[in-house]
Length: 83
Length: 146
Image 1: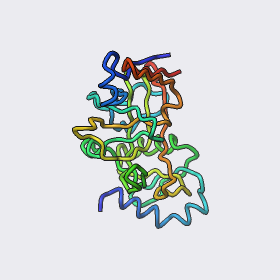
Image 2: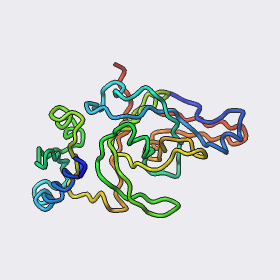
Image 3: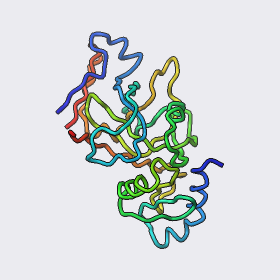
C-alpha cells in the first residue's frame, strides 16, 4: 500500500473523533498519527513542511468528504511577491 | 496590471484548433507559503489550456506522476464522458507571464495527447481574478489580471 494510502486509512479510522473534536479544522496525519489541527490550510502546510519536508503526510479538512462529486479541491490563487 | 497574449494573433485557425494557452511551470515546493517569491518548481514550461469550461485547475495525470507530485487522496471529477475517480495531487503552478501562482490540490486527469497537447487546464477559479478578451477573427486572446 502506498505511503499516503496508509495515512488516508489512519485518517478514516480517526474520522469520528476528528469530526467530534476538530470539525472544520485542517489536520495533519503522519505515521498514522494525528499531528495537529489548524484553523488554516497554510498553517497546517507550514508545520507539515517544517517537520516532514515533502512527506508523505496527509493534510485534510475535517468534515469534508473528498469522495463526494460536489467536493471542490482547495486551490489558492496567489500573486508572487517580488523578492 | 499584467496583460498577456494567450491566443494566436493573426492565426485564428490555430486558436480554433488549440484554444487559448498559457505557459506554466509545475511542481511541488513543500516549503512554499503565500507571500513567498516564486515557488521552487522545475524550470521546464508546459502548455496549459485556459478552460472556461472547467471550474478548477487540473494537471495531466502522467505529468503529475513523472514529477512525483505528492498524492493528497482521491476525488470524483465530472466531464463530458461522465463521472470518474482520479488521484488528487498537491502542487504549485507558476505562471511566469503573469507572475501568479495557483497552489493547492489538483485533480490528475488524462490530458496530453496528439490532439490535446496540454499538461494543465486552467479553470474559472483562477479566471475570476482575470479579464479575458477573445477575438476570434484575429486569433488574439488577451488575459489581464489585477
